[in-house]
Image 1 (cartoon, rainbow, N blue to C red):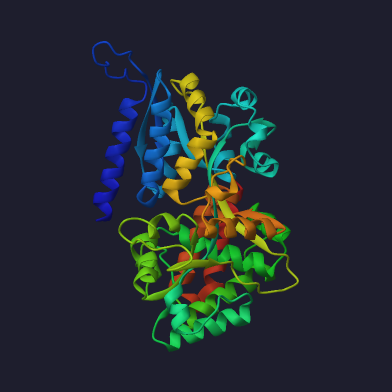
Image 2: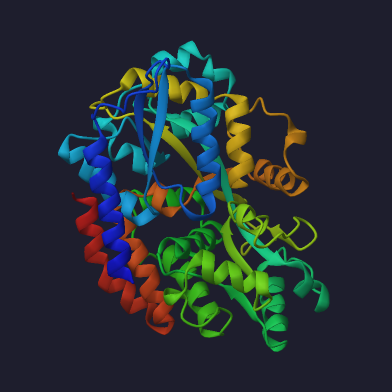
Length: 427
């Protein structure tokens, strides 16, 4: 199955590369021919409907250009973005994660200060978001299209049946897990088959036990995973795994078709995931109602002296310098920064739109509570693989999944992984 999936991804990429720079098909008689804008992205599975809305939003608006998209899954995309840039035959637009992933390819990207000024986008997005997600080395490079926060999403019936309330601190969290396990239900569903869902556990445990500034140093390579601060977070995570709070074989379980479904079916009580999960639970297959069938709670505090931080990420759009249609790509980005476009994407994905001119009552009650929770936190942090350089993220995700497999050996696993981080930060 893995081989088949890989071949399918490669086939999609080959067809995409063949299309980049090709002449678009002729329009019908009497119709003006639209110029093609190629778009390579990772909005698959749950996010596919939102992506269709994104493309339709622009194509319905533009009489001159046609946005044509190619979809890859997350891991295939992470490889293909470097391959297409190296080949010198990139698309006109990439989706990308704000932060370290953009910085890693910055030399290959086209600044967009011109359309930023044209669209008066300083009035469209929050200043801190502009500074941390859109601006690199003093220039604008990214248009934000989706923001999401990481939290626990839980099955309300299980909590109600067991007379449990969402825990606010670590002691209560352990009590809740014990009660759920005693009832014969898996407390926590984790699907780390694709590795990245595991990162949220280390991220939050570190943010709840060590200063925010320490995490920044660690992810820049200025601190070590064998430091007392890091080891304390890993010890807590190992303890949860050894107590049997997680489902069996998380590394063989998919996050969406596995862990999310366990919560939906009542086989597990909760999962630590991004708010995009709402798009899945609210779809035609599940038809779950926010606040009635499922809800969220923030990651509990562990050390009360540590200020709360909210973990999240931001998806955006960037233009490579060697894009065939830079002009068209800039027009597409400017349009997709707008209120109505971002509303359409939010509806499709279940995530929050970055445009601050969207009225509050557009969002559901649960989304408004997520926004309020994020606003109450003194610190907001991009999650692990969006903050540390890509090579270090690869080493870290591999280490996390080994710890999930062998939690009692976490110290040995960390020690064995240290040379990988040294190599990653010295590249």
